Amino acid sequence: MPIRFSIYFLLIIAGCASKKFKPSYQESLSQYREEYKNGFLNNSRSPLTADDSKYLDFFPMDETWKLQCTCQKISDAKPFEMPTYSGVTRTYLLYADAKCKYKDQNLTLQLYKNIHQPINPLYKNNLFLPFKDFTNNEGTYGGGRYINLLDTDIKNEKIEIDFNKSYNPWCAYSDGFNCPIPPRENHIEIEVNAGEKNFKGMYKKQGS
Image 1: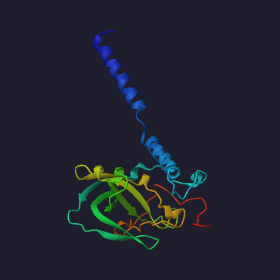
Image 2 (image 1 turned 90 degrees about the vertical axis):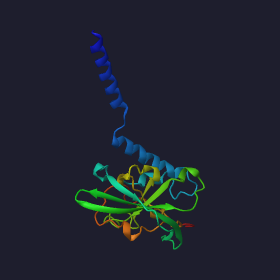
Image 3 (image 1 turned 90 degrees about the horizontal axis):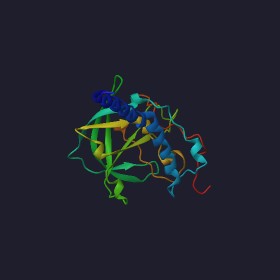
Image 4 (image 1 turned 180 degrees about the vertical axis):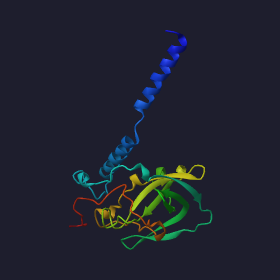
C-alpha cells in the first residue's frame, strides 16, 4: 500500500473514531439529567428521595431551545432584594443582559449573581437565570423555573442558554424552602416547551 494512501486511510479511521466516541447532544443531555436526578440524593436537605426520582418529568430534547445569545455585562448595577415564595428575600446583583432569538421571537433575559460569598468556592462563578413562561400552571410548575450558568460561559460578549436544562425550584416538590420569584423582566411571553415539567409525585409538607 503506498505510504500516502496509508496515511490518508489512517486519518479517515482516526476521524471516524473521534466522531464515534464524541457524545451526541442527546447523549450529553441524558447524562446531564441523570446527574441532576442524582443530585437530590447527595444533599441532606433534598425534598426528594430515590423513590421520588421516577416522578421527575421532562420535555423531549429540543435543540431549537439551545439559544446563542449576545451578552452585555452590567457595570453600574446595585444589589437588590429578590423576593421568594416563602416571604424572605435574597440579595442579588444584575450581572448581565442576554439577548436571544427563538424562531421569530426576540427574548431579553437578565442574569443574576448572588452577592454573598458562597460556602463552596466552586460556586463563586455561578449565574442565576429564573424565568416564567406560558407553560406555567399547565405543563410546568406555576412558580417558574431556573437555569444555572457561569460567568465564565460569557465569551466575546456571547453566551449559550440551553432551556433544555431548565429545572424546577425545590418549592415545586415541598414547602419549607426559599425559592426566588422570577422578576418581571424574565417573564417570557411564549411557551417554553423545554426542560423540566411538573413533578408527577406527591407534594410534601414539612412535618407531615
